[in-house]
Length: 178
Image: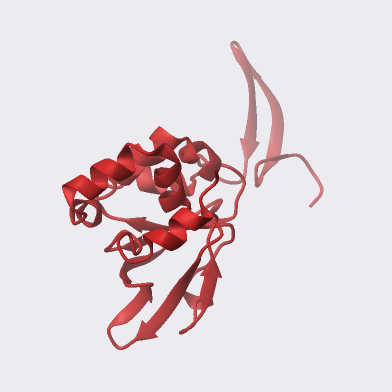
């Protein structure tokens, strides 16, 4: 590990002078940092989630160092919520933030790290339950439809429902920041 590094790339030839600057040859391709938010923002199926993360400022938090695990409901999952309920949630920033933080964990949990019956504490303090059976992997009642989208600061699992929005709303509200 001796030498000069740019991120994880080692400088193998330094200080090649040119007319308009200096070139350093490195032994790897530098790629931009990808965060869990980048995965969500670049997904065709997460327009709503991307927007509400931006509305609450959680996109900035989830762009941080991490690690994070995000259970990311699709646009279809949001569309399945009755319009009046969704409007009430969107008009209450504290409630929206509580719901969104119920979809994130302050640790990296790949699918291989999950076990049937496991309970995971989310960022908002409430727990989600993992169920693994012949029908698939579930976070509460939401099915994981795509797992292990890895970023530098964590992982995203795409789910087909907003987590227990109607059945566990009381638990979520109890844990929201006053």
